[in-house]
Length: 396
Image 1 (cartoon, rainbow, N blue to C red):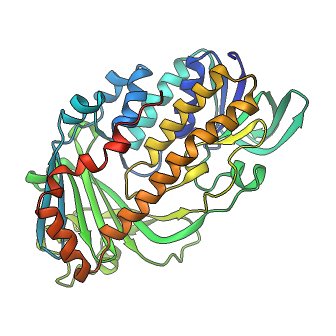
Image 2 (cartoon, helix red, strand yellow):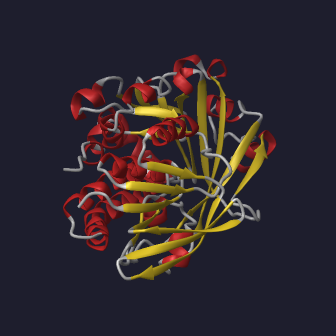
Image 3 (cartoon, rainbow, N blue to C red):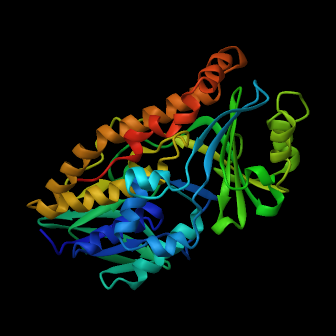
């Protein structure tokens, strides 16, 4: 059934993606975003073929190609081995194999492309400075109570989609789902001009394994900047979930004064003057996302650690599946239930894979010897084969 009126709570990547997939099918969508302006926190994001194919099908390929980068390869390094242990070619190969590109992109650039498309679509209304206060259910429809610029407003609708992130108000206050908890891992993120990066790494997606920590880096902003993410097992003591950090803190937390890190890795972590550190949060996903005409999407439903680079991709997949389930459903509630049934097994599998990857990435040196040896003996040249079940996914 087409032509529903739907509310999306959250104007991030998942929220705008689902607004576009729903509007494509003729539904009228209102996106309520609490920020005064659309802006994406963080830095880079990897968009593998399972997600990029959806964005391309939405007509966003040319705009994204102008700001994204297709990495030449994936290079894996180990501090135990003091250097590279694996390399897998990328370039055009993912597109040739799975029919869609592998992109690395700044989150703000991806959000800008999605926002421009949403603003241009006649069936999408973006409402900023909007805060959800509650949901009232009545026969045949619901009413979303919110404040917009501090003034109370009601939004009658056929359904509500909570795409409001890991600390989702829709999940916690409306669905009665679990709150977000710190996972014991902290991510330090920074970007530097591409000229500051080691020349031999500028076009690659790089991954460094270390005991209880790892580093990821890749080019963004059409190759003008270089994204660095360093994740460490840590404790969190700040009141905010996101705070500034400097070079001295990174050096202390990652032990750069020791011989733990080889010179190239120490050089990478010493590049940025300023970092932003994030508490990586999660929650038990064993709960019902949907109840009647309310459901959840993306991190609000199934937040995952970034060890499989699929957080954004899963939200984009959710958006496509949710739109498809609405096409043949007799009503919104049945569509939301079907969507949850379809998505939960894959979401759980990717969450589990990310957790497994985290254990592999952060192995102590004794176990890391076997990991590194396995990579050197050939597995490391076929890393994309191990991700084929993720990259090759299609909605139908």
